[in-house]
Amino acid sequence: MLEIDKMGKVLHPMVKDSISSHIEQGAMPVVKGIIVHQTDSSTASGTLSSYANPNANGAHFLIDKDGTIYQTASVFKKTYHVGRLRSRCLAEMTCEPAELKIAQKWDVAGTHKREMKKAVPERYPSNSDSIGIELVGKAYPVADKKAPPVFEAATPEQNSALKWLVRELRETLSVPLTEVYRHPVVSYKTPSEAESASW
Image (cartoon, rainbow, N blue to C red; front, side, top):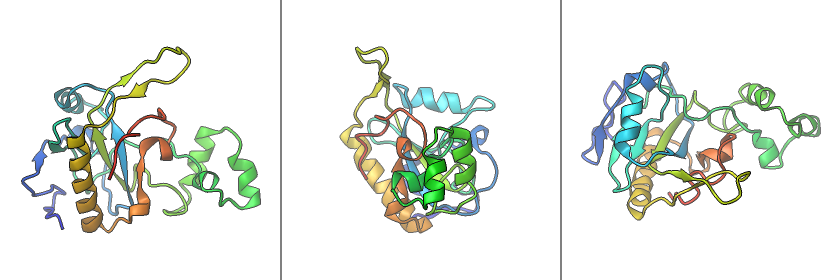
């Protein structure tokens, strides 16, 4: 299990302290899930610099291409890393008939509002109760201009570090494996984001 101090900082030689108060958005008393992202930037330094800006958004951890892990926010603080939630019952085909009819309509704001009235695991983990892990990785345009960009593959070093970090966070914070997701699963994001991530 990880040692975490009273400020929410992980005390482990594999985790470098790079916490930025600019991305912290209030207390997070309980963690229900872990969301894996990619940065759409080429370097860790660029992402870390952006987290220093006032009103910046970010996640709790950042994993560089060489596998270096940076902690960028307290695990006791919310960050804005998820966005609006998708309907979990629609994705998992478990909606009651009345909800199914509503969930099938394209209404991003309405879906998020309805989902946030539920508790995990009836809904996906959100900004209010999940840890975000970013992998440094750029999204590149494809030949079809109408198609979304495609994220570069995570490196073996990133995936090794991600496996270790997810395992340690799950054990320490009592997060079930069923509540660890790629960002596009839970929210409306580029489909290839973190596609090659493994934990």
